[in-house]
Image 1: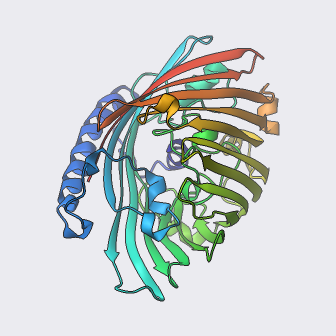
Image 2 (image 1 turned 180 degrees about the vertical axis):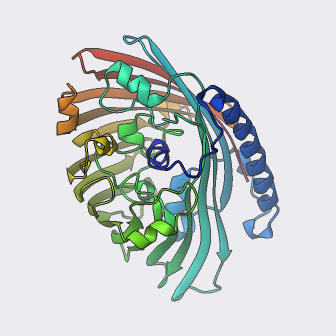
Length: 428
């Protein structure tokens, strides 16, 4: 989920510690890792004592699973207040290439309501949603190099972190308006979560880990994380939303200076999202445009997505496909900033209670991607493959996920990649 953001931030070196050398990055990473974890824990403990959380009789709150998606739920009564602290290490191997990669992420995610009107009206509930993370490569081989050695067109996990990193992925004010028919987000927004919403994609620490599912390897819209405004209007089963986001934000925290350049992601989406008691249905169409930036040409794209749960949420089908024009590097050096695919996507299914087990989930998805001209010049052809995982909640605060991918690689052979993800979390 964060590798897109890291790639953008890593181009700006002005805020990095000047004395860090390659030999001591792992030491710095470990020291940052524990310091950030402690700071987040202290902050979360402090927030958890605030009376605004409401019902003191709520049971087992700490064992409930939340994610970044929960802060953007379109239904006002279903947006939880929570603070989540999560530690999620991941390990993956490429059997044919005989390579191993591992990375870890600490997430500090939350949603806190600060304004509650007595009655619905023009001005509704308002609150703050945020996501702060620390990421690092635990082993010697980062994901991007792992993918290159395995001959893969896209990264098989979305945890690429060549250097230890701390950043704000999102911090935005969420405001309800006009009897809850309108919701606005103002702040540092994350388009990859706001658009083409699905509980089965967009987060490599809770569901599929491949970057074509956890992120997007076609359109740059997913990684365009910056200051902006997004407004959603849903009077009934159908909704429309649109907004603009700073397309050149480089600062890992809040980048106000880049707003002066006037380069934005212009996004619009129309979708069908009826309110159902037995599951979620969300079908969307999203055209978008990104202004030419300092390294990429103007980009236009189209994102199609669907999610449908049935059988009282026991089963689900889902998918996303993206087309893109433009978004090419202005110079040969900038070609590395291009997304590797010109079009591609995935489609899959999930068993949310396999064999009647409430704490298990089994899911699989087919992945497909067509390379850009630049990637073709490097010898890549169309690649496709399958990812499947089995997730088991072992305790109220820990689950483990076994993952397996097999993808047609650059040499036209199948690369098998088993993986293992641990997710320890605490919710206040």
